[in-house]
Length: 364
Image (cartoon, rainbow, N blue to C red; front, side, top):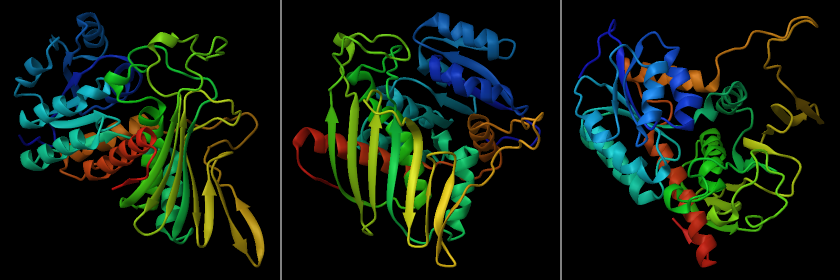
């Protein structure tokens, strides 16, 4: 169904939990060309609460997503459920004629992600995955430098998602069946997507991975969100992977919710190229050689201009992601994150998990 220039995009929300209320619903509510017309959650109270805060007058509430998909006036569906259900809900939504924004990761494994990609191609509907870290100010600036050739050919990178003690204790984050894994699939996916996008390299050759349950049963936890229940902590607390791409480039991926490591970094990348390098360790830094001397360049990415002026807060990554997504739907543009890119992230994550289980190298 075509959307006219003066029409509003009608959005249905499937999954009204933390990521919906913390990211998608506030971002969509700021767009004048969007109206949220339906809300679905297996816990009806959550759907009602989201409807009352963000929905238009008369917005519907469902506990079965298939009923929501029967509404032919809905243009776009946001799939914001636990990882295991991403694939089949997305496929059903695409088949029902909806464009789909699916929260990361794309799916729990590559086979399920492929079903989503196939459905998008078969139906001609747009599909994107919620990797908003690309839309941060530092990410966009670094991407522009990479595209300008400042770093040259990037042959080594690190994808970092390191927390010292920040294990999510709500929802189903600790449930391996529902989520497909722990920090690797939860936050490591953001770091890996950001790194692959910066490198513009989506052809992995092989990988080696390890996962750990080293701190799951800790008594003294010091967790930012309170103590977790060790009996429910069935996913890894840390995962590490080494990925070799077809062109010989290598990526070192580190993802952990809990590690005895003080330098926490989440959804960050380090890039090393033939002309220069970049990291996000202390803000964005670009390093290289100029006039035979080493330099470190730190772009000023804030608007702070005086002691009494802290700058004007710009568009957040979440808001920019939502705006670009809706613009892609209205104006028939390629989404900022394509399913062809996102499925590679899922393939690599699955490869690391497989290598960790088998103790062997995983070839793509």
